[in-house]
Length: 141
Image (tube, rainbow, N blue to C red; front, side, top):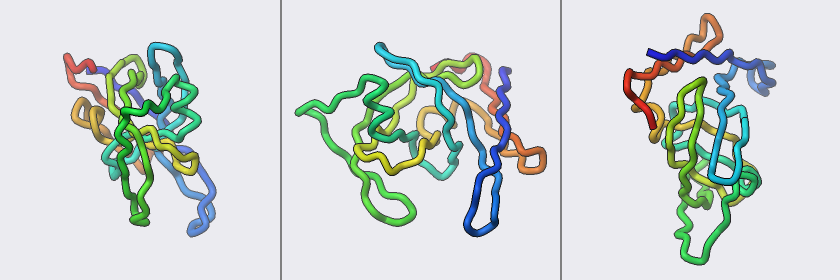
């Protein structure tokens, strides 16, 4: 089984002064671009999401035939997005995942559950400030 480990990152917090956040450095790839990005690992997010500019950098374009969907977060406010597919590399493992290309900028990069979490076991190790992704044998995207 392949295991990839990421360290938590200390970030400012209004409530706590600073807090530790689980961050993964991943590679997103399309047929026209490859981008290495840091994403929050979010077990509460149904799917991976990226802001508008990042999708444009990956070569995404909005087509007249696209169906604009809407997702809601904790605030309940709807955010428009288009469903897209990318290749995602975590450590040495490549997966094909669907993501929400959000049509606004004001969203964090989130690594969500769809197409990723079912293919691995994820351990959030708060004590040692790390996240471990253990991919099941034979699981390729």
